Length: 236
Image 1: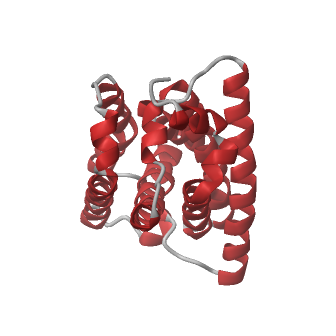
Image 2: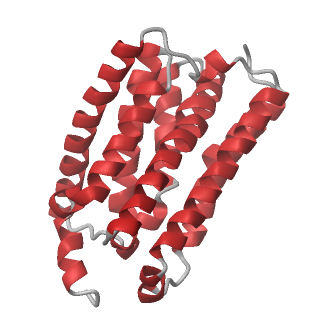
């Protein structure tokens, strides 16, 4: 179905408003030491914000009678969708490494916020995994579900829509500096591919969760070595 004016307005809020908020948030001074002492509360705060975004998007979709299948809620073949998700996970981890290495090669530094988000002990790891699950469902629904559907309908091409949504997704990670924007934008385009090809969000949700989980469970020490150095020397 064609997006209604209200649906388009919500898509604009998602795809333009969230990056603007991220840019404003990135300008604020953050007490990293204080935040690190309350990392689990930070995870809870971020997860709560994502849940609100997801629920508001779900409410708008229901209000405007947008079919759930148009937004990717459906799986024709569970096994095939799972394989798509696992394959996207592997490619996504390689993509993160490549973009991060390229950014480092041209002198782009990682944001200290990226280091702050990485868990350090068992309770924090469980909190991070919970946040990863919430982010996988809510961000995929908001961006690759509702946002991709609305943008694709407006511009007349799912792939051009995916490029616009991926740009927005990258900018929404502006608190991670330019390196994080490039990484999130590239990952967003990758996650859009199986969504378009299969018509389902399931592969993207699976991949999003496992990519986040792999990074948080120690992969960041390999994929983001600069953060390891900064972790040893917080003043850096």
